Length: 108
Image (tube, rainbow, N blue to C red; front, side, top):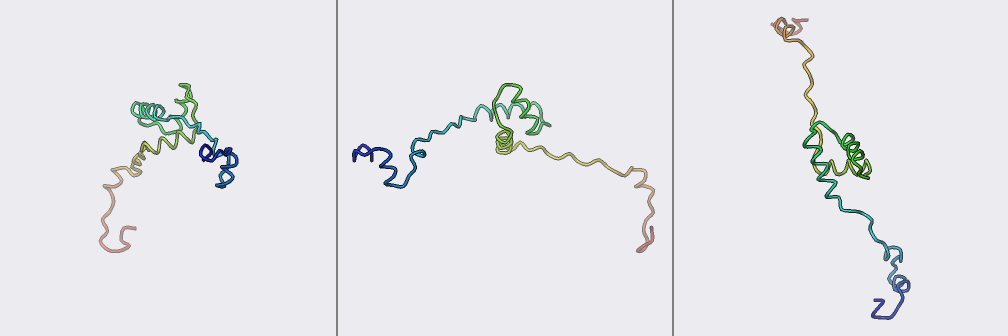
């Protein structure tokens, strides 16, 4: 539009109600493929590490990355930790010695 009509950028943006700051905006976001690959490598070697521990390891290696970005990538890759199974609370011996209920309210 500026070249065709011979108009300045400011006037062209004003004509279509578009901010000049949006016209000149350049994204500073870098490619995160290298970070994703490194997070996968860490999670393959250390299975029980969550996103917090992975973030600490990345920072120690020199990566400049935010905790929220680490968590977002960790979740996008589907690397959520599985919950451990709870331990048995009652011993097997106690379970074997229980009385059998013949009727309602009979055992206790």
